[in-house]
Amino acid sequence: MNLLVGSLLLLVIVPACTTPPEIKQAVVAKDVAYAENARLMNIHRELLVSIDTRYWYWYRYAKKLALLDQAMKWATTDPEPPAGQTKENHASLVLLSLLGMKPVDPAKPDPLLTAINRMRLRDLPERKGKNDSVVFEKGRSDMNGLVQGIPELIDAIQKKVETEYTEEMKAADYSAFDDYQTNLAALRRINGMIKRYLDIDVTVKRDDVEQLAESVNALR
Image 1 (tube, helix red, strand yellow):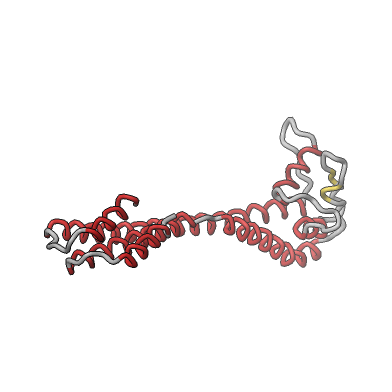
Image 2: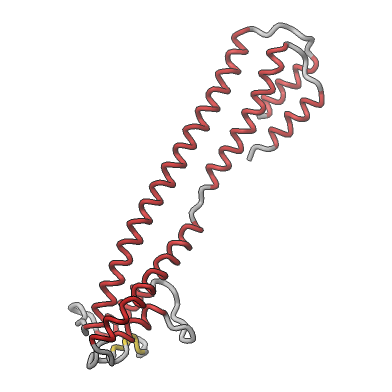
């Protein structure tokens, strides 16, 4: 960048002269290259956004199905833990899969867990976690209550997954593309100034050099 500004400053003190065609062609070629870079970067950004969008679409779909399967399993049965795992550890791991990494707030029961416990069929035993806290309450519902609770369960699952998706999308960072386009726009302005002066074969005014310097400073 300093070399570019220095070249323009040199034009201030050099008498007007005819610019060789090769130099003009090089400046035009540079602008064409900048435009092509901008086009390719836009394509790259659109592709990345498209991939992220498709990934999250299928992630949300699979996550909702997994949560629904887990919820219905614990609402209707008392699953045995895998080999080598205690019932307490098993219940705690299931709770973690239902709630994610969100800490449990006793003052604000999780809607999904609340829906499961409300739907649990009568005679299903209470299941505690590792810290002896109740994860799944003793069942007290019947088939009618189970069926009537499904809309609430689906709504809780929907809100949980969509909230997670919203938070993840906030963390998505495409600012590098914006910074690149900002830098590229500044370079194209500088190149355009050079081209205009070469086209009319005049020396550069000091005010115009200052304007050029401002364009350089816009680069990030």
